[in-house]
Length: 164
Image (cartoon, rainbow, N blue to C red; front, top):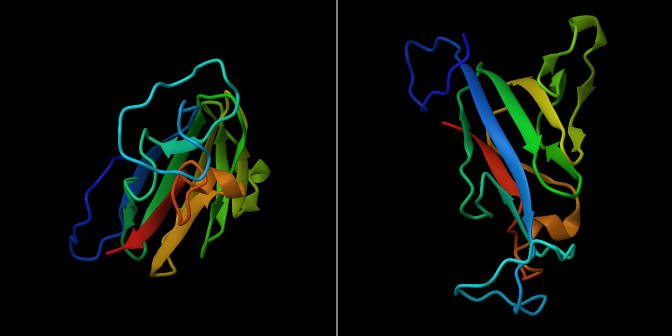
């Protein structure tokens, strides 16, 4: 029933879209806070001062948008495989929390939100209807988590929901 699809129109029939978003943070050594320069840097897996934040291994602007069409039924599965929590916030939509740690949540227990805290080691499944066309930010709500090493401009754990 659920499958990942590319953005195509088939007689305007609503589709089910299913996305997986793995949340990660990284401690990059030898790069002063606020600087951003291309290069190869060592990762420090012991140091808890993270300065790069990614979704599926990419930081914005290289994250892939969640492509939807008006009327689509969209499920997003978040997995936090790292140390810190990430409150993930969707603009322009409300979503239902439909699963936790690989188990469905009974319909009578599901709640509506626009931000969900994904703690270390947790997974959450959310569902929303694509009913508000535009390009909508979907990001961690911790300010320095939407930067690349604190450099000016949006970066880090940030993606968009794009209607096509």
